[in-house]
Length: 140
Image (spheres, rainbow, N blue to C red):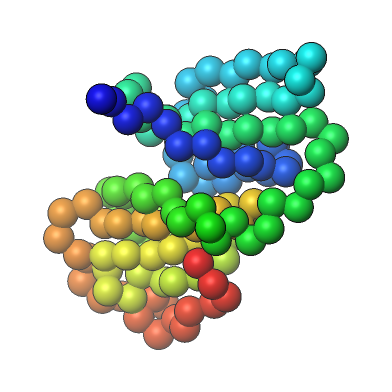
């Protein structure tokens, strides 16, 4: 058995692509529009990792409320520099829900409220401001 992908529904495809691609650094692997079904599938992957993907499903003109997406759980990514990525995301207007106070773990949420866990590759980074003093915000 081989794990292929996780699917998350998105309300605003462009906002989600900005978050996942410009924010987290994922790359679009492929996209397929299904006019008869009125939806688009976009597959994203981390650079150099063709075997595991995140599938974004955008149902055109859907008014469905996907809720807080807490029943999904979260996606997790190992990152080279958790402080730099959190600063980058914060600069894009993304709330850092659980700051990387320990130099190891942070949580943010996508535009569709999908929890994203960020984990520092290797050993935790030394504690640094502003992260050490930052409180949790909202839920993740």
